[in-house]
Image (cartoon, rainbow, N blue to C red):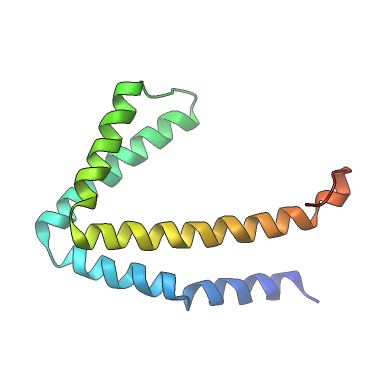
Amino acid sequence: MNIYDKAHDLANALKESQEVADITSAMKLVDADPESKRMLDDFRVKQNEVQQRMMSGDMPSPEEMEQMEKLFEVLSLNLNIRRLFDAERRLSVIIQDVNKIITDSLQHLYGAEQS
């Protein structure tokens, strides 16, 4: 069994998944509305800035996190953006589940009990 072939099979399965199709469809709807696209792009820039700062050890203030949460809630009122966020969340769950399956399969190497 070639692990790389299996990884490519998994990558192809993800690309062909309903979740990716839903993201693509929602993205097209958002892109077709200039105001929605601008709002989403602005949010993504702010989100990326916060994530980059967090990765460098600069934790955002509670006020800044609350502001990001409120912005997310406002964006979620837009049906097309909410569809996109929902589809992205579903894909994220799949990726987390796959990661857990892989890491759980290696737990025996480090003396941990398998769950």
